[in-house]
Image (cartoon, rainbow, N blue to C red; front, side, top):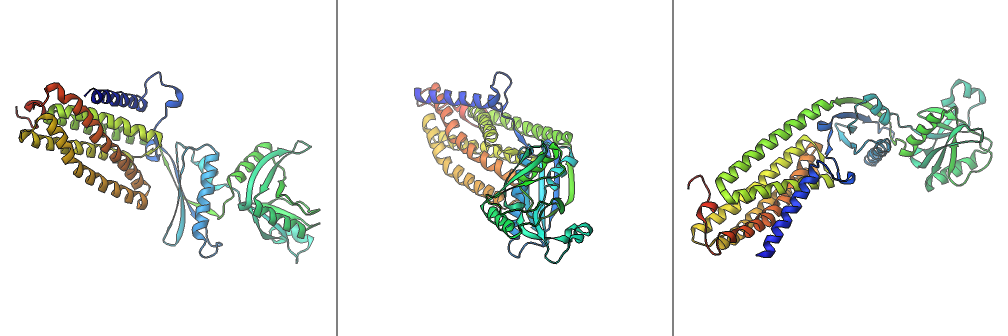
Length: 432
């Protein structure tokens, strides 16, 4: 019994610590004060939708091209300090789209610049059937594309030459280094033009074969322009062209309003459940309320640590999991009531009630977790947010119902006399 009470006190202390971690007021170290991550609908931000042009991609490689596009956009947005962007690709009605959600970003023009102006870098060589005059008339016709482009870049950084002029120093990956070496070997005393977004920015003359997989991009750059170009190249060149087809800005005030409404509705529901549990199940209900508060603290702490991005749908999933946590306690208490009616002692009714309720709790929660997994794998982003908080909440609720509630009940039942039942404190209903 002493061990049980020590465990109960320990769980209560851990629950209080978790609650303080969820809602710190003072004295907590900065590295422990982790804020909740809010989604676009709660925090506000920008939602951009692009159309990807796969017309030049070989048949059967569209999927990998879209994945490459998503990876490039994620690296690019992360490089500019946008925390946890939501980037996904989808193919519907024969079109390929890229969806980018930037929570906390309210400058739409800046967001479009970050995404849409990712440079398309390519290297072109002189056409064999052109003359020097063609260069002045039509630079694009003077050069022909090669297989070397930005997808083979490994690194890019800004530097200064001996005249203190900025340039961009690029490094190719091993495959790109071989292609670049072959190009320079085949075009000695000719120009290899460097095109950025279809515009020639540098036309160096090759004097010898260049090995090592490095090159310099020079031009009339300011230091800021060179730095931005290096950053954009470093994050990756776009494997396919994209076109902005939709933009939406969600104001922070709308997000705050949604958050406030969600919080208020959840709080009212929780208070009603707590009052009902205490009035109907009395001492058992009070213990369940304490366990429910600890459940909330544990769940929200877990959401912070993972971290889980909270959306309106995610909050709904969490609130639903609270209901399932209460449901587990109701099953246990009803089983206990049946055992007490049969004349069992309080201790015997407690153990038998938990044992008999466990199968129903386990089966119900496992089926709900499986449903949450299906929603996660096959649902949209909003559905995934709902499924994640619901699934995690159910897992925590199983622990709190079977471990925490049971430990608290064991710790208290001996205070009412070993082997004796206490009809009023442990019966259910509003009758006396």
